[in-house]
Length: 154
Image (cartoon, rainbow, N blue to C red; front, side, top):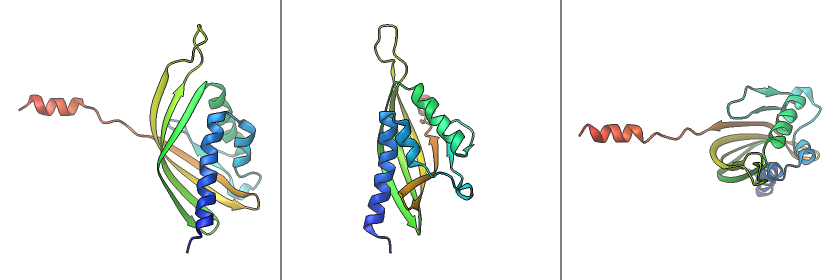
């Protein structure tokens, strides 16, 4: 049986991951990931990126994202947490609103919405639940063109 306290702790760790990204706090983000143990090497797959393996590559990717994203906000939906011993699996939908670098006028660049489904794997450590792996995949929007083609054939 899964303890409600463990489920809550994992959900809080997952939420902290996204809130840290929103604040752009690289040091705190680094602390959320497993460190040091080669047997449990961390990995990350950002939408459209190759697999990143190892603490250096993964954290470098977040530094690049934070440096090139003026604004980002995550609205998480469909959050599901599963536990098996000292490993936790979280699946969710990331409803992302982000803005690029400021324009010449100093105003925030255009805001862009994106839908990503994500899997976050956590490991229990002496310091709490730490990220072991993150995998995000874009959700491709269905085209209305096929619906219009079907209707025009009637």
